[in-house]
Image: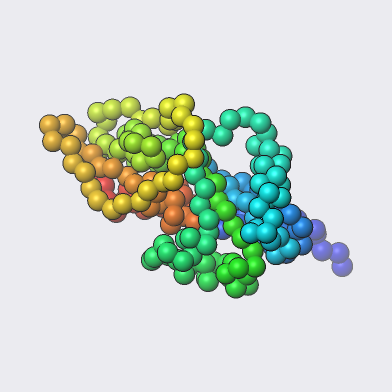
Amino acid sequence: MKFPFFSKREPVTFRERLLAALGHAEKADKVFFVPLGEGFYVYVLPPAYDFIAERERFNRDADQARRSVLGDAPLGRYTLVNFRDVREARSPYSDDYQLWAEDFAIKLTGEIGLIFMVREQEVRQVVARECERVGLTCEPHGQWDMRVHQGTGGQGTPGSPDIHGSPGIHGSPGIHGSPGIPMPEQILYTGDLVYEAIGRARNLSELVREYLANNIS
């Protein structure tokens, strides 16, 4: 009896794509670059790679790997996040990798390196799309954050100004009101959600959706 052939489903979520990249890292001999979706990308440093001793090699290989995926178009504003920094200092989700990384968890403590690249314009588009989905409008606030409006008193902004560079993103809790404006508004601190997405290997859109449901009535 012959059984029908079932092709393996392609990874579609942040976690699935990251796990697939970790699986490939074990056999790779140089850094490679993987799109994770929703403005997130990751440089994967395989075990055979000595980042500290071979920094020039990393820079060369990383640039080549990124160009092979994104081409030569300008990157716009972006930031780099070393997974080690999330693992060591980003409570309360600094230990979550022990669950989502499965058998790779121990290797993320030193054997395999991950450096995430997060692009501002794509992240803003995700936030704007989720706001629009629930009838909210939003606009850029500062370098990375978004000002979210309740009601329909403004136009959402899916893009961002033509700005370049790679400053770090911040994360700081709090709610800012806006006296004199009849429509309530709140600042969504994008950095908080970016670090959580990396620490917990979750799609940014899911985190934005949860944030809006829990914080904006």
